[in-house]
Amino acid sequence: MASSTGDEVLFEFPNFIRVFKDGRVDRLIGNDVVPPSIHPETGVQSKDVAISPEINLTARLYIPKTTNPDQKLPLLVYYHGGGFCIETAFSPTYHTYLNSLVAEAKVVVVSVDYRRAPEHPLPASYDDSWAALKWVASHSTGDCHDPWLNQYVDFENVFLAGDSAGANIAHNMAIRIGSEPVEGIKLVGIVLIHPYFWGKDPIGAEGADMNKRGSVDGLWRFVNPLSSGSDDPLINPILDPRFSRLGCRKVLVCVAEKDVLRDRGWYYYEELRKNGWGGVVEMMEDKVY
Image (cartoon, rainbow, N blue to C red; front, top):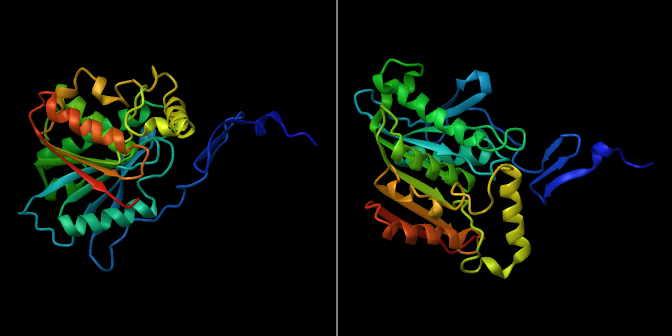
């Protein structure tokens, strides 16, 4: 028997996501979730909060074991990776990672669960991430929705971070802050882990595997169908006229030796050093990937 039209595949990123003509979406990885907890080894506590119930925008908050209301802690706003279309703030990978980070760094973390493509194509992820920042900043008066943020956060010591698509989001939030400061918070720095940046013209080793290059191009078009393409400043930040006005003074870029995104991370680092921005940027490359 012939398959129905609805079973026809409209888009597929192998081993990642598959979309059918009838609108069904199969996320092939990144579907597992874990609840918030009190971590038995580190004592890190986490809980889930609603930021905007109207659009189902939520976040997972983390605080370290030693939390003295008289000692304010730095705040890290984290954006998960997954190509803008898989994973969540509640996946085991991010929950485990942020538990360990909070315990080691003694920071408060807000891990944002933004809406994902294709059900919510870009700029939804960016809009949600900005809304989350505004929500965080609303607590700077000490009398807003969430008691953890009211009691424990030093709003003069805020960082953004993310991996892959999340690193892309962190950069774009910092760019926006550069021209549209968020009242109530001071953005000190951003950490970009394997950032999902790209461009129309290959650099470094990007031209060695055109199939892989085509996949990266295709994924961007999939999650942002109204984009102008791979030279869109949202994914090629070097072409953004606001690049030198990045709204923080510290940047750490992390890349992996064999990652297809490696050369873009280095390119971002090199261009940021010489474009007149004036902050401090550091680079770290993992030789095992």
